Each structure stands twice: as structure tokens, then as C-alpha cells.
Length: 438
Image (cartoon, rainbow, N blue to C red; front, top):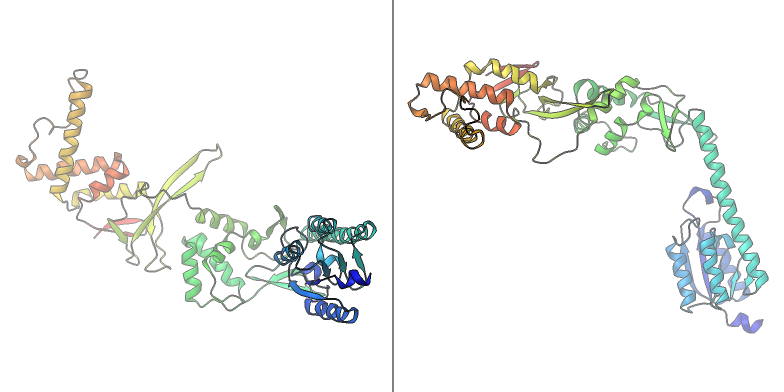
């Protein structure tokens, strides 16, 4: 036995989990102190010391433990010194790797503070029982914790930290419930109201929060991603999701469910199709309230019969003034008002005449090559055959172009509308859903 003891080269391994389930385990410094004292007392030859802070619940996930086993394989040492068996393993995978190395003769013995496990059947069996008992404790602890969290949810208390606008109420050093944060709750409510009633985007809410100097509990500016997380959190109207299940909270809501649902509709963004979606009327007008540019977006409405209707809305982009209260206007209404202004608008006649001539040429080609003689009475326009625009009276040209413009506005594609609107000199302003000729 003395000869075997003299041939043993130990690796001292100390581990403490970084997770809450092992808070009561001895710290790494404590383990090292105790085991070094034991090695000195019993004259154990320690060649290496390996420490790590990592959970042992899952196999193969501890880098330093893997390094420990590799040292055994490389014959850098042939014994392990550790505080207790559960420092080495709390799962079947890592336990199996340790026992395999003992079977191969690479690992001669494992010394703990109170026990020793050599390479013989009885002691290996005892080692496996102790490590399996540690795994059983882990598994039972997980089951009990999950059951306790489910019970907590049933009572309307969401586990974890309260979101912005609420404060945790602690009892016996545990979260018992939440209450309104009087300082931050009004700001959270205003965030929702600005999105629901004023059409704010997440970026506009972020800018507003920065402008008023809002700071989180950690004295930091609120990140844009946190703004969206808050705006999509049902916690604020009295419900919360935990474990893919929705629960009713026992706390005071900050907003109503109607406001929350309105915000979700406002935040819904259609998938972007770059260079495919055109909004031709953005360039011809500006916001009459703040003088900013006008932008557009598509909103989708899901009907009861599972059909989806889409509508295009034009509105101030609020980059110049994010508090601008200029309301939305539909593209259909915008076209109707633009048609009313046709008699008074100024035109780029050369551009429009060129486009009109190209259209006449295209239609004439369809008449000659596709229709042939099937409809000999086809009348394209009164200016079709042999049209020579240059000899038309100026008044008739202008009226003709305005009729052509009216046709494209009412029946043209977005691409055709965008091209033809380039022939308008006049500019417009949007004021309270009214298109005003400037």
C-alpha cells in the first residue's frame, strides 16, 4: 500500500457551481485550503491544481473538467484529490467517463475529505452510488422548484424581476408580489398612449425617453430593444406569460387591454420587400403642421372570414418634430383630393407629352398587332392616328395632359403614378387630412 501511495500523482480539483442550486457548497478557496492541508498531512504528491465555477448538471459542458480527464489520459497524473464526489459529477455522462478511466487503469484512486475510492469493484460501485445520489438531488430539486413556480403563477405572481413600471415586494428575502412604481409607471403609460393615439414608432418613443432624460434603475438610457420588449409585454394590462402559459396577475394594471391591443396593431410591420413597394405620393407633399416630410406604410386588417384587406396610409414621418399630431390619410382619399386640384396645378408639359406619346405608340401597336381586324371600330383617343402633338393648340395640349394625368392617377400602377407625378411642378401640404395646394 505504501508503494502504491508513493506512485500516485494527484491533481487537486475544486469546483463551485455559478448557479443558485449550489450556493451552500463550500467555496473554491475553502476547498483548496482544506484539501491542501490534507495533502500536506498525509504526504500526497499534488502535481496540478484545477479550479472552475461551472454547473455539473450537464455532461461534457465543463472545460476544466474535460482538461482534468485529458491529464489522466496523457499520464500527467493518475489520481484525483477533491472535496466530495459531487464536485466531480452530478450527471451520468461525466460519471461514466471517470469510471471508464478507472477501468483502463489511468485513474488509480480518488481521494475526498472523508473517503477514498480505489480501482476495485466495491469502491467504484460506492462512488457511482454517491454521484448518482447527487444527480437524484439535482433532479428532485428541479422538479420541486418548477412546481413551486407554477403554484406562484397560479396565485398571480410572476417569478423573476418586475418589468419597468413595477417594483418587487420582498418578504423573507423572496419575491412575494409586485406593486406600482410611482416614479416610472406614468412614463410607461405615456409610452403606450403615444403609440396607440399618436402613431409613435419604437424609435420615436426611444427619442422621447431620451429627451425627457429618462433613466433605468441602473441609471442608463433605455435601449431601443427594451422599448419594444415593454410595448409588447402583456404584463402591463394584467396578464403575464410563463412557461408558454398565460396567467392572470394579482397586481394593478398600468394600461387597459384595449390600449395594449391598439399598440400591437400599430407596431405590426409588414415584411419589407426592398425596391418592390412604391409609394408614389410621398414626394409631392409635405406635412403642413411641422414642415417635415411625408412617408407611407401599409396596414393589414384580418377579417372574420380569414381574408386580409390592405390599406396604404400617408402621414408625417415625425423626424422634424416627433410630437407632430398630423393624422393619417389613406391613399384613396389623397388621390381624390389631388384630382380636385388638377385644374390649378402646374405641369412639366415636355415630360408629360413624351410619356403620353409613348403610351399612344404602345396602344397603337397593340391595336395593329394583337387586335388586327377583330375590332376595326376601336377608338383609342381623339389624338391617336398620326398624332402630331406639336401642332396642337396649347390649351388643348394642357387639357389633354390633365385628362391623361387623371387616368393614370385613377387606374395606373404605382410605377406609372410615380413616373407621371414627376411631371407636376406644384407642391402640396397635408393639414388635418386635407391636401392644400401651396
